[in-house]
Every structure is written in structure tokens, then in C-alpha cells.
Image 1: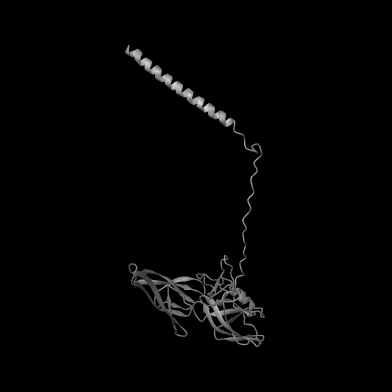
Image 2 (image 1 turned 90 degrees about the vertical axis):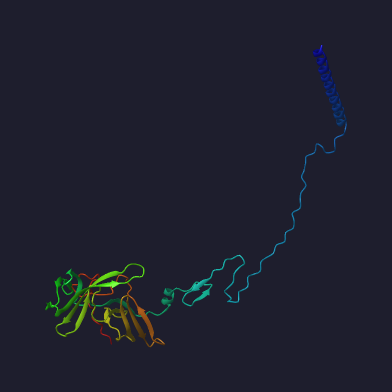
Length: 305
């Protein structure tokens, strides 16, 4: 009996929901019918045409020309133009134009009329190139630069072919202090030789080659066909031009020469260097095989007026 009562209640509730839904649908139908009776607006079927918008007025201005700076009339730059400034190391000044290179400046000068072919300097006829033996029994290794031969000799050895006598020979181990590392020891062999004719003494070491005489500049003049030799302190003329050799240097090879001419307001000094980088700065005498340079022939001096 209880189950039947519950079924009746559920059935009654569902009926109420159905009636409410039917009433809501009827109400919506009446609203739709009233909307259908409202007349459509005019131009409902016309094509939509967008309205144009006037462009805004924009004013334009022109930048005035840049005025020159107080540094000079050529120092002119636009607002957004990066400046180009050059530094001349010769004058130690800034400029807006590239500095003239030394080559360009040199090309404007009149030709000097003289060039340095090379610097010649002979080595001594005997060289000490090393040593052999132990303490108390050392012998030096000598080189005859005339023939290129090497030989061993002690103190007292006479060399008639060279006109020399080896007076003494010694080997010392020198201590060289160093702040950055331990002391360094350098072994140096020294020989004193005497010229049999003049009695002059010459000190030889195995560290450097002994050079004789002053360096000689081998020069080439524009109006002279063959090169010629000149030492420091000499003067010579080529046509109406007079040249004075102030100094000659072997390492690096160079010669300082002063030019005087009626066409020049004042003497012109110039330091000449060999044009070829491979030109040797030291010329050994014939037969020197150990030297890295090759001997060249000696040019006769030109007959200057």
C-alpha cells in the first residue's frame, strides 16, 4: 500500500513539471508572434557601404644645413651622420681628412739622386768559433777566414800564413744572476792573438765574430753607372751636387748623407737604407764559409769631376 502511495506522488510531480513546461512553451510562442508583427526597418535589404574617414593633416619640416664648428670650416657634420676624424701621428693633431702617408709626401720631394746598395764590413782574418777539452787542457777551435779552414790550437801557437801568434787562450764559466729564476752559467772562450808585424793585440771570443775596420757604404748615384764605396766623413760630387757621408752603420745597415746643391735653399739630410731587405749588412772576406752572408765584389770609385 505504501509503494502505491509513493508511485502516485511521483506521478503527480511529473505531471506538474509537464504542465509547467507546456505553459512556458506557449508563452514563448506568443512572444515570437508579437515580434513577427513588428515592421522591418527601411533599407534592410540594401548593401552596407562603409563611410570614408578623412586622413589627418601632417606637417613636414626640413632640417637646416649643419653649420661648421669652431675648429674650422671643414668640420661639418649632419645630426645622424657619424663623424670621421683622423689622427696624424706626425703632427699629433686631429683632422677630418686622412693624413698624407710618408710615401706620398716623399713622392713630392725631388729625387735625392743617391741610393744605398749595401753596407760592407770585413771580418778579422782569424776567428774563434769554439773549444774542446777539459779544465786545464782546453784547446781553441779557430777558423781561417781567408781559406775557410778550421783547426785546433793552444796558447803559443804561431800562424805564419796569417802573420799572427796566439798569445793566450782561456775558458771561463761566468755566473749570471737572475731575479726570476736560478743563476745561469755561461761559458766563454777567449783568445788573445798578436800581429807579428805591428805587434797589435786582438781579443777573440767564441760569442761574436771579430770585425775589422769601419763599415763602408756602397752607394749608387743616378748619373753614375757603377756603384762605389764611401766611408763616414768623406765627401764627393756628382755633377753639380755635393754629398757628405755623415755616418755609416752596419747593423741595421744605413748611411746618413747630406746633399748640397745650387738648386736647394739649404742642405738636405737623409738616412739611406738598402732597398732590398735581403741585402747583407756584413760582407766577409773571400773564403769565409761560416758567415751567413756572401762576399760581393769591390766596385771601383767613379771618376767624379
